[in-house]
Image 1 (cartoon, rainbow, N blue to C red):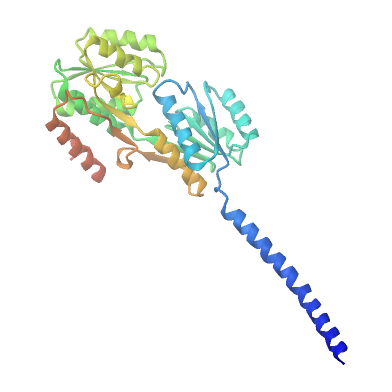
Image 2 (image 1 turned 60 degrees about the horizontal axis):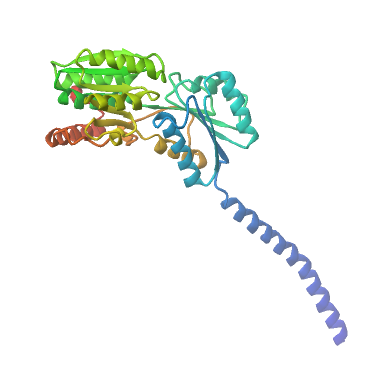
Length: 336
């Protein structure tokens, strides 16, 4: 009888084990799967950057490169970049290379990339394309265009120039007439100094340094004592030349006080690395929206750089108050 009972118990135990083992395997599989899923970094895989010029220009391209390095550091992903991407054909070739490397987020660092990305996006639906300062709207589901609000930064830079000019003649050397910061700068100068004259000359190119230097000489001959060089490919050389002449400048894109703290009265700074990091993080979290977006001084992605000791402290204090008021209300001093 005991033997019969023992056999029954053994049989029952075996039957329970047959049920328990698959259950344990199932639970273990779910644990490993969920653990692997939650340890993933998110949507981002690898990131690419396309630059129309070079990443060593100390201004625009360098800022984009620093943004790419920020993404690499903060999100721990592989990053790649390509320089001299200045046409649709070259852009398409670069995108194809990036796709082969597993890139699924590409930044186009410049105003022309938005039109290229609107075409390429349908060919590469697994990639999200982000253009910076595109002049045309972003139109596809996997494209995003981020534009800086450049008029206000130009306006506040112009206020500094209008206040500080001794000759009442201020110069702008722009890349193109359509640049919003050019109009903003002129209006800022005239807001604080009704007697000031603003001389505007345009290179009609982002990088033509020789032409920019020739235009600078023309402006100096017209008694200009402060210059705003609004071109990322030539503004460093222009500021250095202005320093040699003992004149003053308003820096552009980067804080250029390091060139000469007595030369550079302040700078209109665009925090491109911050924009890139925020954009990549949003994409990684599945929060990056397609379409067109703006950012500027209200979001602290544009700000005024260090002030020269030449600029009086009372004026700086009043200017900072105007900037804070603009951030709160969206109204510039001449709009109140």
